[in-house]
Length: 165
Image (tube, rainbow, N blue to C red; front, top):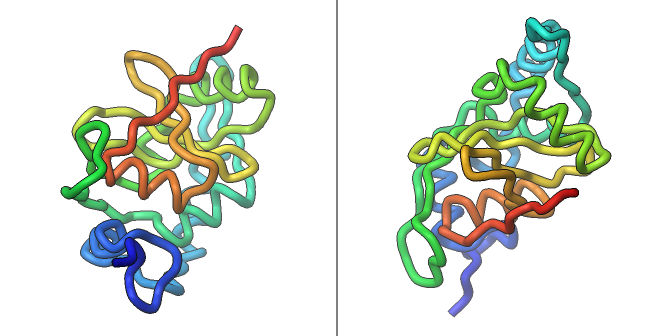
C-alpha cells in the first residue's frame, strides 16, 4: 500500500488529508496575500535596527500554504508528538534579530514562515527553501523543502538539532 494519496505524488496520505482539511489543494496560489506579508516584513524594523529578509522561496511558500492552520496527523511511524502548524509569516514579525542571527550562523538568508501551534516553535525558511524551527530549546532543521518539512512537522518526525559553533 502506498503512503502517497492516489493521483498525488507530493504528500503521504495523512499529510495530504490534513492539508486538504486546512484548505489546501493542488494549484493553490495566493500571491497577493504573499506580497502583503512580504511588504509588512520588509517594512518592519526592530528597536535594535534588525530587519527581515524576503526572497522568492519564502514568497512561494506563503503563496501556496499561507494562512493554513494544518492539523497534526495521527498514525504510524511517529517519532515525536505530531504538531499542528500555522503558516503565517507574521507570527515571526518581532523576531527579526533571532532569524537574522540564525541566518548569519547558517550563512544564508532566513525569513519567517509560521509556527507550531502546540509548542510555540517559530518556523522559518531559508533562501534555498529549507525549513527550520526555533524554540526555547534551540534551533532545529525541519526539512530540505516546504513539502518534506510539513510532512515531518505534522506527521511527528523528529527534527534535527542544529549545532553551530
